[in-house]
Each structure stands twice: as C-alpha cells, then as structure tokens.
Length: 227
Ligand SMILES: NC(=O)c1ccc[n+]([C@@H]2O[C@H](COP(=O)([O-])OP(=O)(O)OC[C@H]3O[C@@H](n4cnc5c(N)ncnc54)[C@H](OP(=O)(O)O)[C@@H]3O)[C@@H](O)[C@H]2O)c1
Image (tube, rainbow, N blue to C red; front, side, top):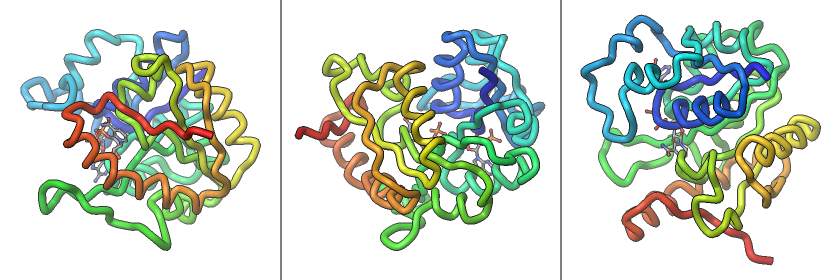
C-alpha cells in the first residue's frame, strides 16, 4: 500500500520505518523538504535527526505535505498539535480528497514549560477541528495515547495485551484502521469509541499520560481496559 505520513519527528520516523519494513511504499511530508534534509546538526533529544534517520531508510520518500497527501492511498498525521491544521492546509483539500487520515496528533502546548496544557479540550478536540476543516477526509483518531515505540510494537510490553482506541465518523474507515492496526503493528485489543467527538477523551488522556511518564520514569507503558 502507498502511505503518506505528515511529520518528520520521532512518530513520523517510527511509523514510516515500521511500514517500510512491512513492504509498504512510504512518503513523509514536511514543510520544506530541502530544509528538512539539511537538519544534520540539529539536536533532537527524542529521536534521530531526520537526515541520520533517512540514511538508514533510503526507500522512504520525502516531499511536501501536498506530495505526501497525493502519494498516499491513506494518510497519517504525525505533526505537532499546532502543526496539524497548517499541515492539512499545506496538503490541500484536493490532495486529501476522501482519504482515510489516521490522526495521531495531540493538542499539547509546551510554551509555558512542563507539564504541557491542552490547546483544546472538554467541548472540542483537535481531531474535530481537523474534521470540520476537511469534511470529506475520513479521519480516524488513534495511536495518540501511547509512545511511538509501542505504537508500532505493542508486544514490547505485557505480551502486547493492552488497549488501543479508534474514534471517527466513518464506520468503514474505522474498520479498515482497526484491521491495519493489527496487520501492521500487532494490536489485538482495539476499542471503537464512536464518532469523532470521542477524540476529546483520547486527547484529554494526555495530561494523565505525561504525569504517568514522570512517575514511571519511562514512556514504555500503556492503558489496558480490563473487562
Ligand atoms: N512522541 C511520541 O511518542 C508521541 C506519542 C503519542 C502522540 N504523539 C503526538 O504525535 C505528534 C508528533 O510527535 P513527534 O514528537 O513525532 O513530533 P513533533 O515534534 O511534535 O512534530 C513534528 C512535526 O510537526 C510539524 N510541524 C510543527 N510545526 C508546524 C507548523 N507550524 N506547520 C506545519 N507543520 C508543523 C513539523 O514539520 P517539519 O517537518 O516541517 O518541521 C514536523 O513534521 C504530536 O502531535 C504528538 O503529541 C507523540
């Protein structure tokens, strides 16, 4: 499958690497591909610099957000919260069309330090803002509640026996994403919460998630719904 991924950070790199490893054709989208390829000396505490990572994954293509949206049969949004709407604007409604958009982004504001606050919550969510701005896109909120390494390898902890969520308005898109989460990454327990307004709860898990990270001293944990 051809997959477009918005985002050059640790999430974009991790998802792209895992999908490339499964034999998919992947293009990463960024604001300025030439500038992104020239980031050799830029410090990135949470992952490799993009050029270092890209040298290890030469088959992954790099383009603009519009290039990646046109390339992908399905598109993944792994931009920062404040970059999500600009990234979709960069891609444009025509390139996005009615494609399925896996939205992993969180509306975190680190401008006042740690812990971050949410730029939108309670009565709205980033996913809803994106869906309202691009009503034809079939947005599915998922993977935003766990760290990048576990998104693509849930078996790394607890034998993979923990929970992922999906939320979105399009039942067929969610069913496909549910299947891909299993096929691509090995997720076995995926809960469909309902329409896109359920992204509010998924994004509002982040204040808890960042505190758990602090308490545990590691991001290698996840939520498990015990019935
Ligand atoms: N890190 C994790 O383990 C984790 C776990 C769960 C969810 N998430 C969520 O996943 C998303 C990605 O996280 P990350 O740590 O990989 O990367 P990040 O540093 O949060 O985001 C990097 C990406 O955001 C884009 N971006 C930033 N500002 C932008 C703007 N004004 N306009 C357009 N694009 C902009 C950057 O574009 P350029 O390429 O052009 O610089 C880059 O591709 C975030 O929303 C985060 O909350 C992360």
